[in-house]
Amino acid sequence: MKNSICAICLLAILIVGCGKNEPPVNPDIKYGKNKFSTVVDGIEREYFVSVPKNYDGKTAVPVVFMLHGTGGDGEKFYNISGWKEVGDQENILTVFPSALSRCIIEEGETKTISKWNSLPAANFYYCAKVTPPDDVKFFKTIIDEITEKYKIDSKRIYFVGFSNGGQMCAKLSMEMGDKIAAIVESAAAFRMDTTFVPVRKMPVTFQLGNGDYGPGKEGPFIPLSNLSSMLSFPGPQPYATTQTYIKSFDLNPNYTISGDTDTVVIATYLPNEVNANYEYNFALIKDLAHLYPNGANHLLYGARINWAWLKNYTLP
Image 1 (cartoon, rainbow, N blue to C red):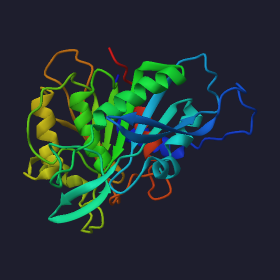
Image 2: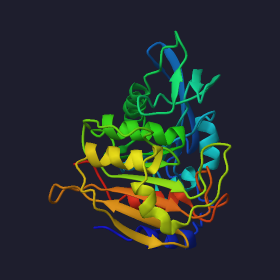
Image 3: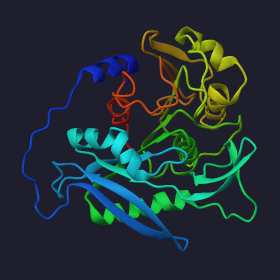
Image 4: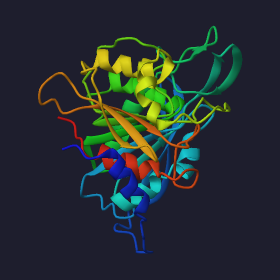
């Protein structure tokens, strides 16, 4: 079942979608950008849905959630992530929720900024008297609402997150495995080496740039040939992230490395359970800083690459 992720990456770079200006499939459906609001625990929340041009309202389609990073919102990643374009090409419903702005303390600095509640294994805390939002409940509410609004394949719901959105996806990999088929975490995930009891052990890929030191930070680009030493050196990532998955998902700690040191190298961990249909991948991307690669800000088009891997999995 497994494909070479690197081969997928290279193929994805070469594939360019060629859309035509065709009339809508169903004139009663609003194609493209849709903004919705909902109320969760008495708080109004917003999310954006991109309806692909070939959606007909009759055939169940997959769904991909794209979670923005700190200080962002759903509309920003609707515009820049590249997922709405891949959604059009692949007939995927794409969803872009917005996090709430709350007072937080991060690296000793107090600020009010949009942030997903990715605690406990994160690098920030909420200020005193702030009630952390229940973002897991928010996502479950969105799934319920889009299930009523659209014809979706409930066994093919996927999440992708960037930075703090990647941290949130790591949390969801433990708490929403009954709803999500597979997850991609980009630029951030668990910050502490800990153990969880997941709802379901599920496929996860964590991708990180070899020049990613966090938002606004710079450092030398790490040779991709250093991947093995990175995985064994104690630190927040990739070590802590990988160790958390090894223990929580009962993975064999012996990994295999694939890919190309000129583009992407991937360490793949397989489950100890025979014939279990999941894996954990850590992908190190060359010449990438703290960005979600969209084909314009980096050679790789993250949404295409991520979809090529995600679509291999469905909920049991």
